[in-house]
Length: 595
Figure 1 (cartoon, rainbow, N blue to C red):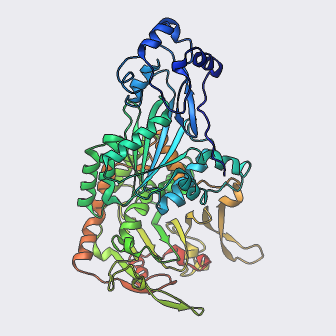
Figure 2: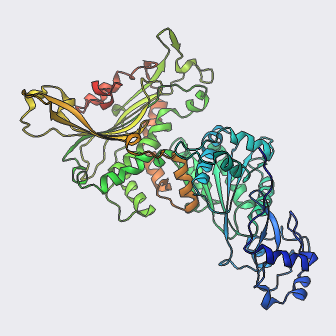
Figure 3: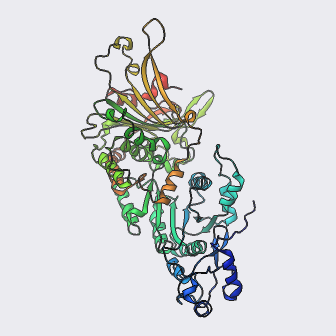
């Protein structure tokens, strides 16, 4: 694939050309050239200079580009002593006659940990999807940063293997990929080296072309090196006059203490509004639709309380095990990996009061109120499990401890079920049941809202003891096959009085032809635009850990063993007893949900 250099667009290339021809010292080159301040003062009067375009050339997305300018005499600082590379972007703008209000902006996106799986499988493809949809700014550059030695061409080859175009938008796909890859570059360096980040900063300036620089760093790295990277990037790679933002991937610590220490470390170098703690489940289409479903439909909002809702279930299941990630997973377990963040965030969105507005702080304030109203988890309200080897259909599936990266005799849970309660007027007494597990019989993530029985139901004899038929249920399936459906009872056509359970179904694939964007696309775009409502605030994180830390410490200190369950089963028997304690049956295990 040809990756030829291209020049940054100029607002008036012909005028720039005339200036270049008329003044040899200002001719274009592929790098910024030093030019004497005296030359500008003598050859171009300052009062008329602002009416011309000065052809100063620098590296940009895919090559060298002229930058328009004009204004007063350029300052001599650093110019006579080696050009403009030593200047900040603001000083550079003054040097070529632009003030901040006149300068175009550019965004430099640096993926730290660019050689890792998350970057290859999620971040770069999401950035390309945004580019394909024309959602990225006009001027942007993407840099990969990691310890691995790699050239720009090698990064582009690696990234190109994971890029795809949407099914409904495949026109000019190859051309778009080529254009995107031209904007991708690589810099190798250590994560704790300010010198290496200073080298990156120099490269970023070459591509920013004197525009107002905004910089986004995505930390696709283990949490134990977050602070090293943030320190180096903030001191040697941050924007001096634009914004600098940092996206931080989970896990955000292992408990309240480690999470607080991480937050303190980050805030040594960043303000809270620069930190974007990402939980990709908050970017999923059905999760974002949750507040719309509730707050914009009169049929649901009055029912959203203890008067009508009997229980709420948040279910996450995967039909595969750790598959080589056992070393990472064993350090965290299913409670930290899924329940404390993904499911708890969904619960907070589901249960929050109506925010004052759609402003990020108003929404996050309501979520924090929910979390602070909840009781810390007790051991008797939790069941943990771990999958074991199982043979099915002549195929033997390995157990968790059969993974070579998992320590023998590990007690780390791969399954957990829990009952949580919110102590406020809206939800008092309503059990919120969470269930998350690996190596189960199916893959799904869903929210199930089971409503109370109809008082004095005329047709209760037709139901008998069948709780499924006697209960209306709203199901929001987050993945796969995104859908919203409401289970209702109706009469089967005919002369007799036979009742049937039916679904009022919104299946997204049938209703909408447009392919649903990946969660990372939405969250990356929000970070670029400074929209914080789908990111986690520090006090929200603290409140979440306060719910789970006592339980996690008790499990580890008492070395409580998990209940074993066969690979590919429905999980430990104990989860059924836990639900039964609250007169609840797991909705995903009913006869109509087995497929």
